[in-house]
Length: 201
Ligand code: GRF
Image (cartoon, rainbow, N blue to C red; front, side, top):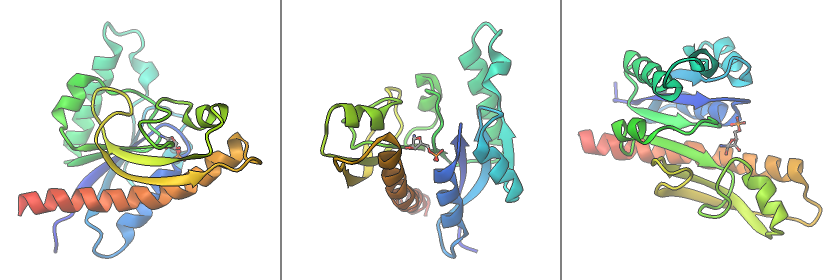
């Protein structure tokens, strides 16, 4: 059997991008397989969906570490353990609303990818769609990129433009962008996994 890259998908919320990645991995000859879905919030709808669909899931509830001396470090140590236990080779952030430390990112060089709802470097941060509307931009989109310590800043892999209509509101624009995200994230995963596979051949 041809080697596939074992991926972890990290989520916090709905997980529609996670579903797009899971679907892609089900198609024959796709170079990745989903080893585990990890959520940092018990309320994540995507976590329930993954469980129902027979995917291995782990909840690392970030609240659990709140009283520890270094909550971020403790969270990331547990994350690292889970990733190792599932023999993960590539991490896909899919609506994972937590910034990973430089120390963690350094352990996974070029092995963490993310999707962001803007044409980076425009509109970084958690309110990218709102910010594009506020700025009266006429075009926005989505970007996949490698993750570095600085937020929404790593090397760009793919981008897709989405025009903003005058009639667009936050909800309509988010939906239009999400539709494109579901196209470019699986494509990105394929590109990155094929690059990794080419290096280990
Ligand atoms: C997406 O817009 C993604 O770009 C951003 O968070 C949102 C997650 O949506 N990072 P979903 O949970 O994948 O539906």
